[in-house]
Image (cartoon, rainbow, N blue to C red; front, side, top):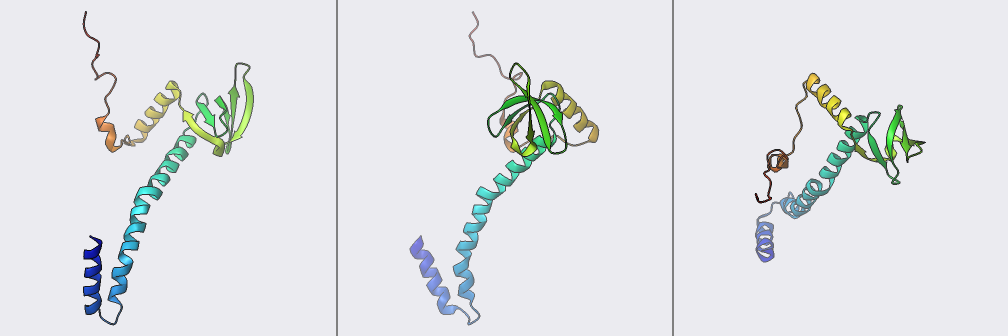
Length: 147
């Protein structure tokens, strides 16, 4: 395949106009590599960052969070750029910046409230391509044999 490509470049080099037409052909593989790299690496990372930003903005009092340092707690207070969480049985209060949150686990009550607000706002539910292939717990049948 590489030999065919070099033969094609040599044939085009003979016919090339003095305007530098072969320069475009020689830069085309690099342009394709950068385009592919953008699609594979940069675009999914931006999508992941946006998803995390949306989760942090949707946090409510009562949700559980995990910080970057591994501290697990329940949100007790939210301000503009800080959250206060209660950890352990003794409810030790700790304050973190919102950027220090790595995972947000919504409580069932807050999840229902968020769905209701989304329905009232008229926002469609965002689903990925692969969601249509996932089985719901209600739809799947038990694999245990009948006795």
